[in-house]
Length: 401
Image 1 (cartoon, rainbow, N blue to C red):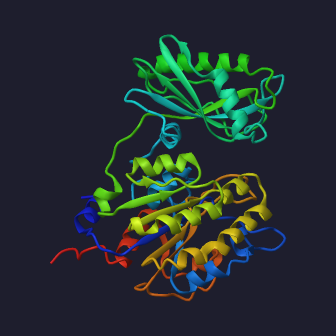
Image 2: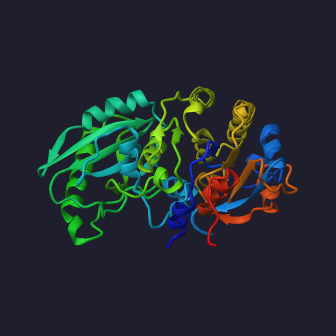
Image 3: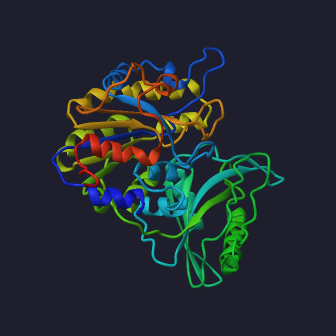
């Protein structure tokens, strides 16, 4: 019996409510000049108050030393084994924008990017072109048919899009063309299994056509594809936890992930304050709400330490809107660290706090990496967060005689 199977047998329905606040890319590294991370630098009295009244620790999203992507990071927090339940980015993005992803379809997440005359990537995000421009470029690529495979290209947000390949005999066992580095050409798509040979050939032909079509569209004159995947199936959060769960997320990928684990996705605006307003409006309808905040991660990826600090401070100013709702349990954590110093995801464990009436408080008074290192939770696996939240909400029966 897996831990998830055990939780499924112990879960009960109760009126108590849980709010899970995930600050994307929350963890950081110290600024060399101050010795403080972004989270430790930010003025955040409300998060500090939650930490002081709750119990804190650090969380490994996959396992120590492993740098998690956003999908496995969130799956771990939701209580799913992030290795056994790994989901490709393409499927997540497709479901997130309500694309009709069918059995046999292969979806990839795409970036519009910039390449120089030698074909080397100079900007993996094409200057973060606006979504409106992305939609215009997608129309140039959408609807192609290559070797009896129809290709759908749809905008997601900013420079991101999805490419969905629909036809017979396709397999998602394909490598990414995005090396995650600039100064080198995009990689060629290779089949990672014999069954994927046809899909690799079609994908490479599509990329070649895209290069021609986009040649004069600087800064978005090429594409990068990653996360080739199909739509997965696994138990919903309602089945496992006996919850009525909802998700409030501005960015499509996280809405897609929430749908795949059985959450109802609530429509919201793009700003942090919009998401908190939506929480207040819809809170009464659910007993579990996942609230996702994206901009801290974007700032970290851009290497913008001060902007990440500002995002955390903006978020903190809105925390009273959450606490006024008086959830029985509040969990605050991140899906991975994105230190501005590294300009990308990292393997560093992420702060986590659990606040509720039945928490044993510890001596942590500030919500930050160094403080949480000495918290009462210790260093835990992300898969332990949901059982702890459920227990503190009195939603788990006793195990055994």
